[in-house]
Length: 225
Image 1 (cartoon, one colour):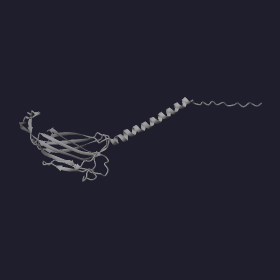
Image 2 (cartoon, rainbow, N blue to C red):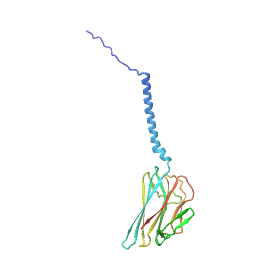
Image 3 (cartoon, rainbow, N blue to C red):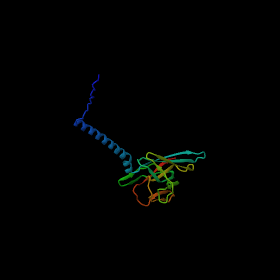
C-alpha cells in the first residue's frame, strides 16, 4: 500500500508599503543618531578644544618660621594651574621677593579733586630686593635648550623658593610672580622674550614682539612676617 505524499505549505508575509516605510524611517533614524554621536564626540573632544585658547591660574602661598637665632625662614610656593582644555607650555617663569618695614610714623591723608584717601595707618618703608629668580626655557629664542615645563589640562605644578630673612629686619614680604605660556606643542617657531632688570636688581621678562597665542600672567601679593 502506497501512502500519498503530503504537500508542504509555506506562508510568506509581505510587508505592506506602510511597514516598509516605517522600517526605512527607523534605519534612517539609527544612522542619523550614529552620525550625530560621532559628530558630538569629535566636536567636544577634538574640534572644540583645538579652537580654545590656553588658560592658566596662579596661587601664591607664603609660610615662615623663626629659627633658633631669631632669623625668619621664609618659603614661597607658587602654583601654576592649567585651567583650560588644551595642553600648555610654560615658556618662562620668574619671581621677585622684596622686604619692607612698618615705620613708626603715620601715613599722610591725601586729596586731589574727585579722588580722596584718608590713611591713618602706619607708613611703609621703600621695599628692598631680597631674592630674584627666573628662567627662559626651550620655547623662547635664546632660552635654555631642552628645558620644558608642560601641563596637561587640569594639571598643576608648584615651584618652591626659600630664603632666610635677618631677624627683626622686615615686617612684610612682597611677592612678584610672572609666567609666559602658550599652547603645546608650539612647533619650531620660538617666541621673542628677554630678561629686563630693574634698578633694584629685580628681573622681569618682556616680549620683543607680539605673537598670537602667547599669554602672560603677572601679579604681586604682600604677606606679613
